[in-house]
Length: 378
Image 1 (cartoon, rainbow, N blue to C red):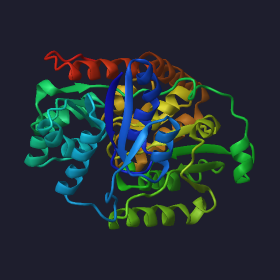
Image 2: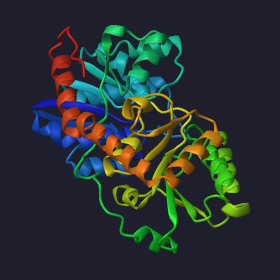
Image 3: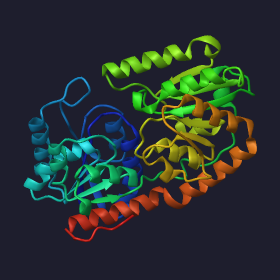
Image 4: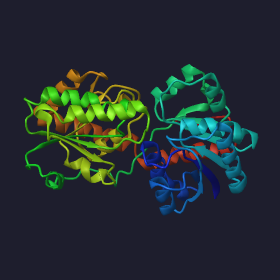
């Protein structure tokens, strides 16, 4: 077994963490064992322990306080010394930046996952380029970072994969209507994601306001919570709550917070609305498509790589009117909903299965460990 040290930044379970967790059992069967440097408390640590992954506690990294780069790199260095891995895998761009110089200094091959489309400093680019290999979750993510100066030969695209047994079409039972005290014929329009500005909940709220008369039986289901303590995140949450509680929307927007039962929630929805301002590769889009529900999403980042023409309705970002038009079109046309959902489901089954993703990640691991110069292309 080849030992891999995983590096995680935060204690919460978001898309990046879920994407890697979905592959661990499959990677174990392909000859890899895992240890993790991660926050010692929280939902991520619990899920790692359930999978028999030893968690080495990462100290002093949170939204409220973050240790210096030097202190964090010392923790990574100590973890490498303790675990003596064949490979280090940083599961985020920021951890990849921290790990690159440390792993290079220790002569340990390293992989860094690029799960964000953000602007990088010259120093951040230099740090990331010290990793042996860089894995972008979409072609859009790869292109963005190569344009900033990441080494083109090191960056490959590796799509996230999901468990198609966990996320699959199921008939709606009405249990969510019952939980929320809604009539059985209520239309449920859902969105899933952190309550942060880039997810565009304010755009959905504006679209919902404009649709209030035409869709009087529509209710909006918001799954997710705010983790960020930044002022802009607090303001975004306040604005969305205010938009959602006034006028004809009062009582029709339901904030469910974090839910572990998203695979059960999705089949109960009439459609998924994903109004993100930026999205490297939206995991909930994969989950919704695999569940067989129709999708309206903004055409940003890697979204069109998941949902090509005919698989969803894609609209411009920051455009409540366009989002409202697409939602109304889908609600009014059940045949269109069925056609888009079927095409999206086929796309997920052929391209985003977790077994396929695990196969490719195992190939990247093996090639990185053996220091092969040729990079497999997913």
